[in-house]
Image (cartoon, rainbow, N blue to C red; front, side, top):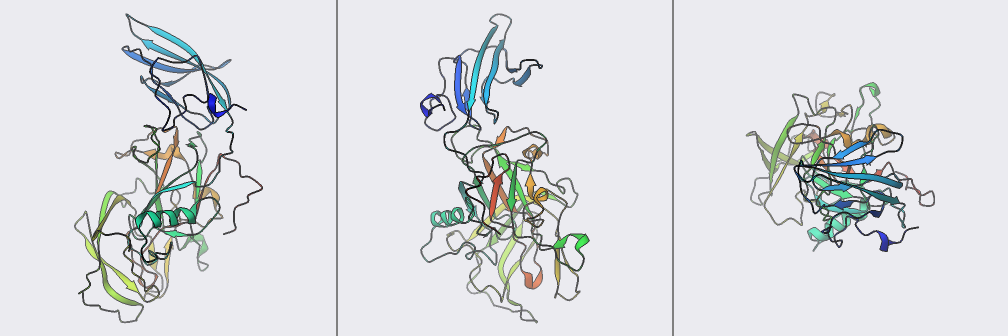
Length: 399
């Protein structure tokens, strides 16, 4: 086993950048980054993986390059400066070894917890007097990290959570890379339509290209089945206002809504409305630890998926979209709750190749209110890197 002392160029906050060129040999752990910054310059550059018995594979044509792989063993690389006056070629090795402390397949850290208002906000996780953003963030992490499986709510449209693992989730071509659990279920009257309590959340990923351990690199949405739909709105913004303490409180006629005009909202398309308060959840819906009187969220917004099949507000069904969203199919449908980093797209909808994902963000993707059921709000309770073996001595808790 290679000791930590030999991992000289791994992508960590404390490791200095290479400033004397490229070494002959490196040792790094699998799924960790090796920053390569050659001191020499030229017109063009090429980083190539040299494979015995197979064609060479060009990895990058940028001057600087980050090498990362989940494949253990010795990897032979070649760096070329393509320049008519000062061409340069350098061969070197990167030895990828197994980590000394086994990676966990489950969430290790929650970086952001920013729910929109909702009927489960301040309850999942529970706000207690004096809690701050920092303490609520810790509560969210305590709920969904490891094998804890305690549900957190993201509230109405746009509310989000950002989390990561103790390693980079590698983008393995042709495979799903991670899985996220929610609390969706199918109703029994018409199971073939796959409807019930689907509250879809959109997934975005970010690769820590600047190697600072923070989610401040570009974000890319994982395009699901509805990404190209004419009904999907991209870059949609919704702003919620803290309830006016002097508002007139008006209940609905059937007494399931205690405050019809509870939380006002506006959106980027000139729309406006209210998130009512129902009789089943009497706590405040606006996050109590937030000092601002307005909360704005921007992201992809899917078409409403709810239908009142009773015709008079007694029975709502929220239908599942085909694939690519969190809390959109029951957890036992593993394939439909798993995600491929290769589906990443930029803001213009162009496919983007990412070596992996260091940060994963889920936001509630529907702006919808369904009578006594309340707002549509994505919930999650666990996530798993599908490329890391589960330790049989630490089984996941049952849902």
